[in-house]
Length: 114
Figure 1 (cartoon, rainbow, N blue to C red):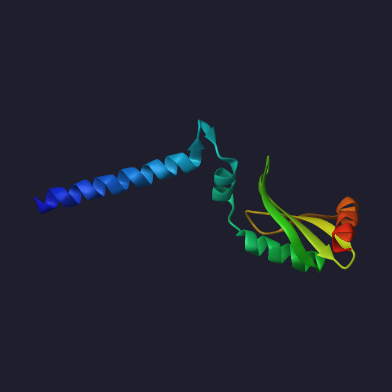
Figure 2: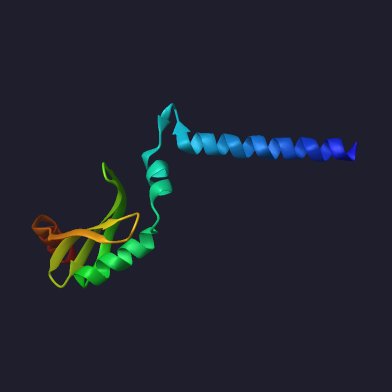
């Protein structure tokens, strides 16, 4: 009887775990992009932020994981002195793919600071 009870509990736990995984990966018939891209990312968001801050010599204001044809990419907005840079970090190897000044955001940050 005790074995049957443990078997029932194990079955319920397994079913719950499988349901949760299925729900996270496929909500209303559509795959959740964030879940799929995060599964492909080998670099943690915090590491990508550190790489971007070091590269642009500033502090991160925003960061997000984006899906691209080549794979997942972290887009990190870094404020350095009076400039804002959009730094893109490869989420699979942590290398900086690009860094460019974002003149539009620079003006927005000035307004916010006043």
